[in-house]
Image (cartoon, rainbow, N blue to C red):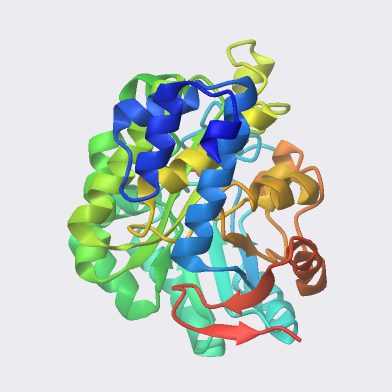
Length: 372
Ligand code: SF4
């Protein structure tokens, strides 16, 4: 393939090597900077590897986001969702509201509740334990994918316990997996600009590893396209790769492109306009070449990219479409281009049009359900 294309010998050698082994950080940095004719061979290589590693199934989960509060003490510079407690549109859902949302989702076949929201002041482990018990008592067969490392850190501090004990309590109450949020970009330089109140890189790694030691698996994420450099994107993926080599606790990797329009840092003039389309494609393709079988599932965030571009990204190394979502107020506040809810039929149509097979899955990618 490569001899028919005018690409540099360096790019050609890296792509050929990637067919058999993971690429290095230096090689990934080279690929993040390619332009022009070199893009298509990269995408084709990532798509080839995707097919070799996970085949032609494109998975997604029937799930429902339950954003239990928008009150947040952290107030990240990229987030248009968080509110102060005394803001007029601040809210905390009560038990009845949470159960009503859950019941509606279960009536639509949901297999997972995604429990996300702001970081409440003074919320302790009892509070998060209560949310889990509330849902598990009513819907024991629905998995709960929830909470961020920053929430857990703060709740453990309020409760006067270490993070391992906090995770033990949450696991016993029904927490199945962690969404891997608060990772954003795992370099302290960028975090100091976009989320200085969040967990540091070292804290994020430590909290995620502790959860995995306790037996709570989860997603790894990256949020890119704001103030970070291309090298920092690669540095982040390499940190995820190293954790996975140690623990094997990540179920999937989810690149999330930055939605700039309503973010405080953009409105204050500190940010760029987000990643371009080819930067999105390169991020996914390079992720596949770096992570390979180690994290076989690479998820496209359709809610951030829109359905059309998400479908294109599925041809650049990705194999999972996330979920039906049933709402996602964080993305909605950021201007989700195609809404925050998708039907099984909508996602299946995108997949079938690519010549691939739509398959429903559970949270941990251990059970799969055929779609007629
Ligand atoms: S991203 Fe999360 S932690 Fe940051 S301000 Fe928004 S809700 Fe709070």
